[in-house]
Amino acid sequence: MRLCFLVEEHYRHDGMPNEVIRQLVAWGHRVDVVRPGGSLLRMTEVVASGTHDAWVLKTVSGGPGLTLLEAAAAAGTTTVNDARSIRGVRDKALAAAIGRTGSLPVPPTYAVARPELLREIPGSEYPLVVKPADGSSGRAVHLVSSPGRLEALLPELAGEHLLIAQPYVPNCGTDIKVYAVGGELFATERCSPLHPDPAVRERRVPLSAEVAAIAAQVGQVYGLDLYGVDVLLGPHGPVVVDVNDFPSFRQVPDAAARVARAVLGLAAAGGAAVRPEPSPPRGLAVSFPAQATASRVGEAR
Image (tube, rainbow, N blue to C red):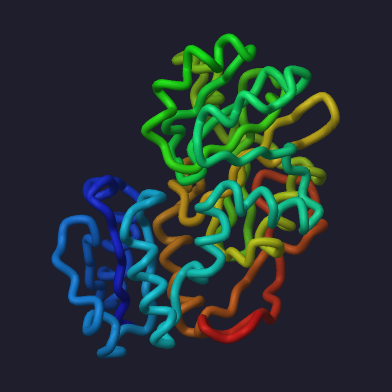
């Protein structure tokens, strides 16, 4: 197969996706790498040749890579993940609305185009978690304890575009990160960006049936095939606080080979996915049978 990977400068030397690319090349496939943030792109021609079996996106939120992927999708090229699905999770305000519509346990979410509008959030909702709607990798995430603290933070937030705010979910200071790849789920525990603790190392943990069911539902609701889900174990049960397309897959055994096989399978099927079922059993890794889903980008799901 011939694949095109869109890789932003931020991930130029990152293990993911470079290890996946090396694995695919070792298996005899051709991989072209385009760096959207560091290249002059002739948009009217770059996706017109139809020479790739699929395009794969590994870029920062808000970067130009998604626009290029959407252009490829509009030309009828298979993309991994579906370009519309990626747009649905990279805009965190939109993701919250989609998640609530899909009955996911998503916190109540406010969105504002100007930071000073956050003053209108009732004091009873504090503490708040405030972050950019296009943020990634924990960038500019703030735990705001009170309206007074918000006032002090407003100048720092002024440089952002759309912001979201959610009531803080009390937790033990660690997140559960669930990775979905090739129809399997893998759970890890890691330090929350709101409670940094160098002593807390990311490690694989058992995946409860409740969290696994939610993680599987995420793939169905957002239409994702390769993804990660951040879950907090709050006082009223698990809460989905973030969804990532093409995450790091840290702690996933043989991650590069697993992701490479998933990419090849999706490319061969024209975008058809092997997604987790909503009711998996307990375990460190949960496997599920294949199921038929939408076939090609640009066609209705």
